[in-house]
Amino acid sequence: MLRLCVVGAEGGDDYAKALSRFDALACVYDADVHKAREFASRYGVSYYTSLEEMIASTRLDGLVVTTPAYTHLSIVSSMIEHCKNIFLARPVGGSFKECKEIASMAKKSSRSMLVPGYIERFNPLVNKAKEVVDGRRYGSMLILEVQSGLMGRMINSSLLYDVAIDGIDTALYMLHAYPDTVYAIGSEKAIVITLGFRDGRVACITSNNLKRLRRITITMENGIVKCDLVRQEIYVEDGDSSDATITIEESMEPISLAMRNFIDAIEGRDRPKISIADALITEKVADAASLSSRLGSQVYIHIQQDDDS
Image (cartoon, rainbow, N blue to C red):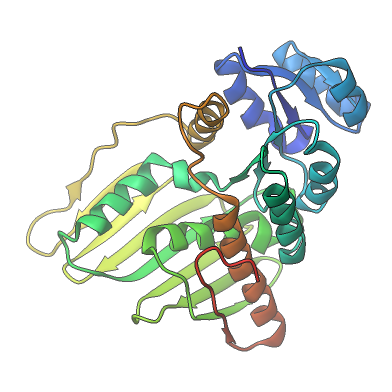
């Protein structure tokens, strides 16, 4: 039986819940003793307030790190030699520079496995929409729109890195391509990011902290695919008939699917669905969006496969 630890009480509840369903949650960690104790009590496991004590006291097969992104570099650098399997809730680093440093650590430690937590890639609805697009029944994709919103406290205290970055990753995942241009404009309450691609396609990511929503609209040559990720609904308008509803067979939450993939990868039954190289590209685009927002102008970006620049 695997023994995994969730690091970070405030962002870790859903991950702990998923791991407990798989009988893989061994303990939890938080630097705040009160948060750690309360977190552990919900799942009937032990808790730690010192990473060093945790490693010395118990055998662990992996960590699920859900603390704010600016802490990830420190945690990975101190733990990677003691615990080879680490899942990092997105974003991987507190900045693109930190993401590159973490990726470099993973590359140097050949026996380690660092898995970025871009969980929308596990969302059954996202993957069903991707199947429709890849099947080209309604022609080629022209425009991809991702709308997302979050109410309440943000773990990373940034709309870009708490909400919009998932939309960026979803766009890159669905389009099978990297953008040439990035333009972003926004405030503390809303942000709009436009990604331009060499073949003329466009992705538009809009995020706010006023209302909880997660929607995807895909405009194709001969149809429009509409997805509501909160309600788990997807349907197609093709102009020739009434809306066609698409059934989703897989109902498990994306976090549970991500944890199952992490467990299977540790046990050698599967490979991680997302790599650190994928995260580098997503966070490079997010970094370009941050720069564009500050400059108030379009930013040109060059990305190659396995880009580490």
